[in-house]
Length: 227
Image (cartoon, rainbow, N blue to C red):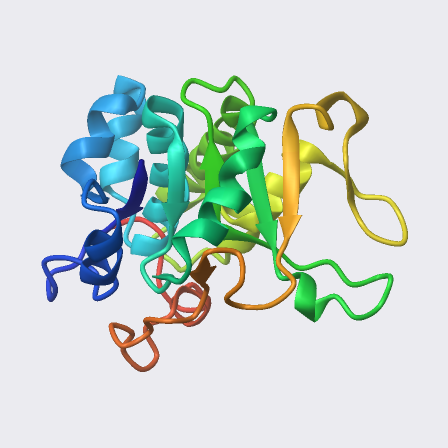
């Protein structure tokens, strides 16, 4: 399964969807209605109260991967060669989870550029829960802080629900760069892309849906996380 998660009041589905569907007819766009039934009941009202779609997406993709398995891509990712994508995803035959990094940007031995906008996993992989548990704990902790005041409470999605949660769960943060923990090396594979297109997809192919000053990295600096 190839899929995206999407919530928008302006667009019914992400601009990249037709391009994916043209190559992969079973391509699916999931929404909150699809994700909420997969969550612990006690967490549902917390999830629904999250203001920033990017935070919801960070969480939703892991619930969807656990339920269905397959290949998740962010809304700005476009398809390239199906043959190259098949080659990339072949690692799922031997691993539970594939993580992706921008290998072309790692020009120094200390560089490390992992991303959470592209992920692949086997259905019901227990390793997904390692990330979900951290995300949920982080979100609940911040909810307590916001509930205690009407003021803005600083936070960072990168650390709360984003890529850093993946790094914490799966990587030893050693020098010169993080490495997969020894106990996960047979189950989690990191695919460092040699360029932006030759892994079967293009990371920044569809950015037309973005509005000025509406990126999560900007909104988190002034908006409370919860409605």
